[in-house]
Image (tube, rainbow, N blue to C red):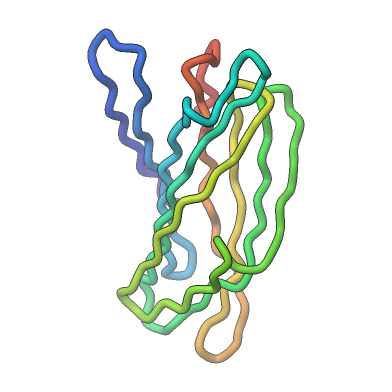
Amino acid sequence: MLGLQFRLQPHREKRFYLTMYEAVTNGVRVRVEPDFDPQRSDPDESYYFWLYTIEISNDGEVPVQLMERHWRITDSLGTTEEVQGPGVVGQTPLLAPGESFTYTSGCPLRTPSGIMLGTYRMIDDTGDAFEVEIPAFSLDSPFASHQMN
């Protein structure tokens, strides 16, 4: 796993920052950028919402298709939820070498921070299936007393 992170944080402002996480498995690169969404969150009701944008790039030499996703979402109290299903955002993108697919989805938590990680089940042009790592990434809101990652 290759981990790449960067942060943009304004001086003396309680603003959100951008962190990017990255993993490469079998020539498939997955980049994740989580972002806390204050408009959809209600801290008084213990409801915190994040958007995450994912870019999936085929850096390999054969076409690949994303068939399924499997997420493990853990809040700061250790409660874990697993989510599985076909494709992402209603799609099963087919990526030729050099192509990428980007989508944005969301995740609510009952705590001000958490962590997500998972896998995509992909198939190549011969029909062979393989798992692609989605790197673990932090869900840290400005209401969290500390950051998990």
